[in-house]
Image (tube, rainbow, N blue to C red; front, side, top):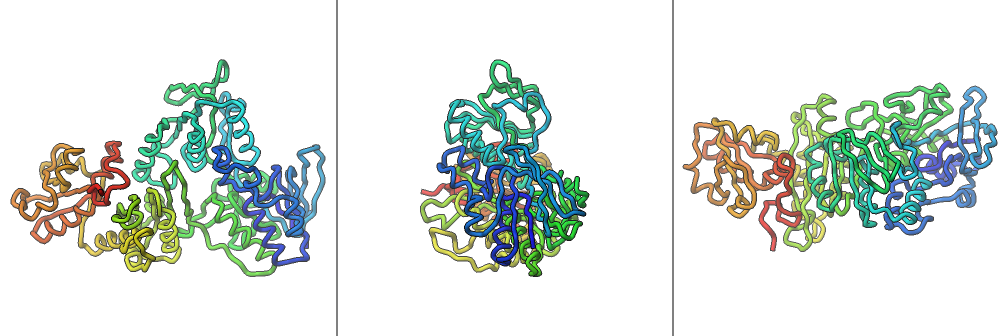
Length: 564
């Protein structure tokens, strides 16, 4: 059996190695149009920034090592330009000398990946305007920085690659401006969860411009980046990181069935509409694990698993891909952002009866030195309690909690299950009530009716409504540091003695720093006959999202009282 693989990065390389482990007799040919195979896309920005210093660390295998260890004929600079399905062959162009030849196959695996979205705009072809997708792109950018010592850079796009590039250019001492078309960075986050990320980016001295877009470049007399708003930014270099699109022209020309966003349609065995052609990676349509809807989820983890599954099926094993839910984690300077499952908008669009809670928890025991808080948004079905999605913004321990939540979602767990999870604890690593447990506690209290909540986008209306009494439960010091006019100020520890100041003939809306003390306040008021609700996420969250203010620090206790 002869297997030809088009594309030698995550999915293609995984398929080749797995297939060889399963079938020693198969002839395996892997064709990669770039000069490198089995390279780490996700590590490319860190070579530009100097965290990764050796070129060879970017590649896990080479054509030589594939040949010696796996007996795989890996050919670089070899672009497949067409597929002859009836003749079961591919046309290959050698990009070094321009010659072409036909390569036959019994089974064909397509792993073409995705390509950068590069709009047709003035000046886009200037040598100072770059993208970052391949190893060659990385060496080009690295060489430009070393040779030209740029002082300023504009990054067009605030997604994964854009923020990683901005981080690494900033680490080199370059003044960076990020221009992002939507009103927040990172599409895996809902807007309010990105607010803390915005504050953090700006705290590093990076100029973050939201709700604007790059529309072109002037290249005479230096590089000038042109914005939709009419703004003009002088820069020594620019990086276009507007996202990626599935690279499926080859499949389209071959007449294979295409799906959402032009992706290649595959079944759960990774077969395309041609049973002898398989496809994996960023270019394929997958099933969203939660909703069952067709999706395109371009991540390295799923691509590697899909490569393994393809090899299994070609070798005669019955292996299926059950779908993806988009688990991800990203370093943004020294902050960590993670997400898994559905965003709130995605959950609503899918028809779920959506509920959400916001919690603010320390990475480990707050009394143990070095604890930093993380903001967690847990999205779940109001009726069943099933966890649908989680977003976490913080520092240490974010990845661990995202991974636990990813397992919970895949297992179909409810928020009550989160509360019951028995997770490891020692003061340097967690708290006896882990942030995952705590999210479960808060959501379970809400479902069971022990508390009623309102959200950050409702506070201003409640303050303006004369038929609602709003009470700020924070300490005098917190109130003095930052507050809004209108609410009564009664610290929670004085609440029982000052109930007479709160009228019982109208609803009461309360808030504290993070939602911890306002829950206590809620229980006091509710048991004293008040119609009450408390603000999920607390005043720090409201201030961050609505007022664009960073209140407190990551080292504060979650309830807002400064540690000493």
